[in-house]
Length: 166
Image (cartoon, rainbow, N blue to C red; front, side, top):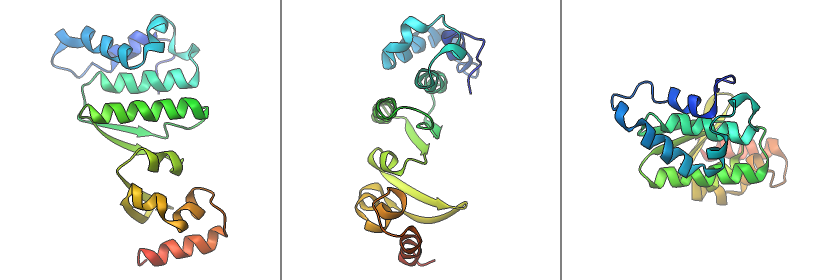
């Protein structure tokens, strides 16, 4: 959640509050604007006036201001247009390649499995399936149950549960 009455830049600066290295904050802001160039012209705009996709970018950028080793994203795609979601996940891939581990909690199984190395499927808070994302993407039951691949979802759910021995 952003501070809607603060500007984009002020929201980013809030993410650096726990940093001991305050001298590098302006450099990190520049890095965030390099990562999200569409935010640079919006640096003085109130965050509450940004689009949903822009707000998500500010939220990710604010988290990056702390120079984390782990970035946790909860429902990044929720309510966003598919092209914005794609772009955000491509940026998460880039962030990961730069050495930041990314943990994404995501209801969009298709995009989550495309942009992850390992995945867990939860059902009512319980892990019902886990494994390398590439294997889960190819699993017919996973496609049927989580990606709308067809078939009866109850049968697919039962098959997934049997497969993991639960």
